[in-house]
Length: 336
Image (tube, rainbow, N blue to C red):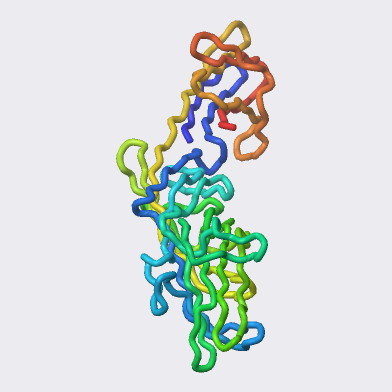
């Protein structure tokens, strides 16, 4: 926020404040770099109760492997899009939940393929694959028997980050100050018949909606000054997750990072000058689209109200004429 104190004119003390949208900073849009931004799902082996089977040790594995789950096999996805924040340089950053365009890229071919769904039999017709963001082979161990139970693919994965104003000190901000998670996704499940006539405990699903998975992020991040008004944001991620695969509830974590670049917007200049007798003229550039002039009788309060006099365009300026006999007043520009 820039502050310009103006001299006393008549009985009016005029103080002009510039602010961008919120008291905690300027609105900054950050462009995410998908080459270094990613989300990784980690789900350890765990015992769950499966209908008609009892306690089963469930293991998530690569879609093409029965023994391991690696980054190359469906648990890691690149992240792209934009982040919306309010940012005070260098004091604080606020992640505006619901205002981002943040998604996981579908760069891995995973089973099942939605195009191979049979609407009559309510199942998949073969074992084909299609692009997806995240996925896994669901395996189980019951007694001494190991078996494949299902294949899972997550598509249209949308992510979100939310916070109050998080303090930024020496370019870094602490953990446990943001919430991160998967706010929506489409889940396709190809359930498999188990050996020994044990049936199919996991039914096939086409385009099932995943419940939101949002939790406190234990990690913080960095904001680097790249020169001028250019900044680099790194948000580190480590948060708990719960995945429900048709009644099989698995717990794990989502880790990774989001790296993005942004530019602090220029604050438009606001000026004041004397008009005719007993008037003052407040002006700002017409290029500053979306700003409203506000006033208050005292600083330190939230009682800012819009100036009702509409601005008049003169050349490349918006101008508002006010009376200099109305007592003490303070003025500011606020982006809408």
